[in-house]
Structures are given as C-alpha cells and as structure tokens.
Image (cartoon, rainbow, N blue to C red; front, top):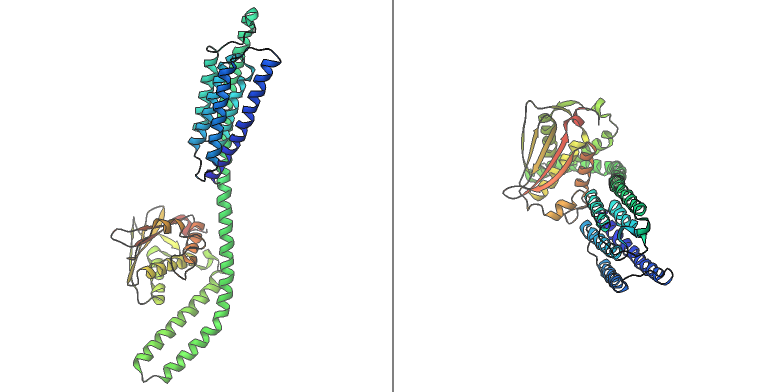
Length: 419
C-alpha cells in the first residue's frame, strides 16, 4: 500500500468533508436564529466559521503541492477541526447542544486513516473537550432549570454514551484499520512476488529456447576450432588461443546441458548432500572454468563443523552470477567467504571495484536494473528471486577499504530439507 498517496487522498477527503461541514454550520445557525428564535453570539460564531473557511483554503493550496502528506500533518488538520467545533459548542450550549456528538467524526477519521497512537490521542482530546463543555459554556437559555435534575441526568447520560463510543472507536476501528493496512501490504508483496515469478518463468522459457538453439552453432564452432588446431599446429601461440577457445566452447555446452536438465531434476532425490565447504569449493571450481583470468580467494568457517546441505543447482548458479558481477567490477581478483551458525548460512562475495552507491543498492535486484552499459540486471534479479524463494535475503553494501560486497543469507533448514 502506498502510504503517502493514501494520506494525500485522506487530506483531500477531509477538505471536502470540511467544506460540507462549514456549509452545514451556516445553515444550522441560520435556522436556529430565524426559525426557532434562538439567541446566539453571531459575531463570534461567524468569526470561527471564517477562520475555518480560511483554514480550508490553506488545505486546498496544500493539496496542490506534490509533497507527501504525513500522518502528523493530517492529525493537525483534525485538531483544527476539533478546536473549531469546541469553540462553536462553547458558544451554543456546550454539552447540552445536540450536535455535540459531532466529536465522533474526527475521531472516526483518525481511527480509520491514522495509526493507533493518533487514534487514542484523538479519543483523549475529544473526551477532554466534551468533559470541559459540561462545565464551561454559554447556555442557550431554554429554561432547563424547571427540570434541572432530569436534564442534568440526560446530559450525563449523553457524556457517558460518548465516552463508551470514543473508546470503542479508538480500539476496534483502529485495530481493524491496522489489520486492513497490514493486509494491503501483504497483498502488495504477494502481487510483486507473483509478477516476479511470472518474469522468472518467462526467463526460464526463453533460456530453454536459447539453449536448444545454441546447441548447433556451438557444435559447429567446436568442430571448426579442432580443425584450426590441426591446421595451425606449428604455431604455438595460435594453437594455445584455439585451445582456450575450445575450452570456453565446451564450458558453454556444459552450461547449456545443465540448463536443460537441472529444471527436471527432483531436488532431494537427485542432488547429493555435501558440506558447505564442498559446495562452495564446487562453485569456485566451476566459476574458475568460466573466468580463468580472475583470481578467486575462497574462505570458509563457522560455529562447529561445516553443516551438510543439499547443493541446489539454482543456488549454485546464483552464486556464479554474483561472482560474475564482482569480476566485472574487479577484473583482477574477487573473494568469496562462507560462514555459518546453527540457524543460517551466510555467503559474501567481495570485490575491489568502485563500490556501490545508495541508488544502486536500492534498485539492484529489480527486474531489470543494471549498472552495465549493455546489462539488463538479470543476474541480480534471479539471485533475489532464488534466495527469497528459500527464505533468505540478498544485500549489497560497500566494504571497508573500497569495493563492494554482496551478502547472501539462507536459513540452513531450507538447504537441509525440501524447499
């Protein structure tokens, strides 16, 4: 749920409601004077209504600004309404005025639109104002002294009714509103997760199609490379380059084969259990074949013996993607360190590149954001999707001494059993 946008909408609704209220107040005062011949201090009441209108004009100007509306600002607007209502009631009978129940209106708005602390603050304020109006007010002069005991009991009953209503609204309505806001946040997260899953499925479909299409040209390149090796066997430099090219082609074919088979494997049934150290060593070995020119330093350690995990292929590929990003930023050397405790496994990939700005850290992992000129951000997006599916998290930050660090945290229970 977009809280700033909702607060802006709530302020707009308050503006229109206040406009209706001011118009209603003018009509009620006019009816009381003209139809019921009720003596009222029209000058003072008119001044209050003018102030309300001016305040509403200021609210209208505020709504034309793009700046977000905070909860405190909306609460102050409601305080102004409570103050105006209290002044009008003081001038027209106080707690004996039948419109004293209008105190419930700002309380309901606070309970539905603001958090619980503001709702309870508004409840305490309206109860205090109502209570004060039982003792301090200008009487309407209807001669209630003829039945003062009964009327006083009636006014006391109205106050007790308002007290109960205020407490109920502040408790139940505020709790209900908080639940609704929480549900909206969960729905927004679920929608974002569903969209991300759709994008992952689409990427998987394209990857499968690309893997199928790339098989033939890679085989052709491999055959031509072998022919060129035989043809230029007398040139050691060129033969070495061709061998490196053939090695990379074989790596590409191996990656494509794993892409087409990994999705069909039953994780617990096919993947073997191994220690964290063995798993990370396998990741480092596989990545070294892809980026042999980059030095990789691997360290492992933690509380107790290395835990046994099921080395899921998606996690392995995620770490390779992160290592590739680190190598792009720091082409000479990168580091990977795995640590563990009884609850979770933490893997950090560090580089000595230019570092990570706050904007990059906030946007990284979204589909698709990349700092590379030709990049699409797919690597970090898939890393986030994979790790979050396992109940973990991916964090980017700057390391001491310069460079960036990508920290992957995964609960060990999700690696030790079926996800």
